[in-house]
Amino acid sequence: MANFLALGLGSGVISLIVLILDIIAIIDILKSGMEPVKKLIWVLVVVLLPVIGMIIYFLIGRK
Image 1 (cartoon, rainbow, N blue to C red):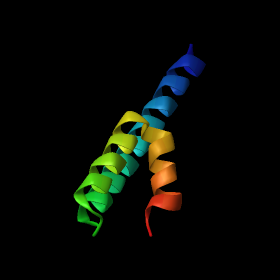
Image 2: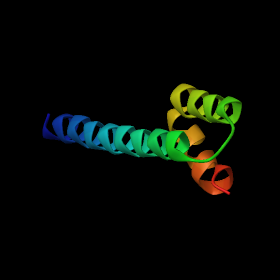
Image 3: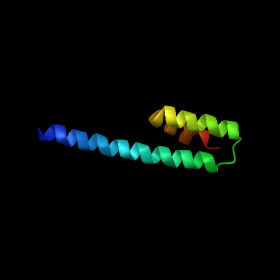
């Protein structure tokens, strides 16, 4: 029983970290000097694909 509780708590912490990183990515996108259409596309990618979109943005989207 304790293992299930720890697993639930761990996944909650991971979800919170992903949420915080997604918010940071969205703020970074909105503050960037990109064209508005590119900003919209990146925000949609990060919102619709939270983990993958954030990773892709931080790896190739920030130029």
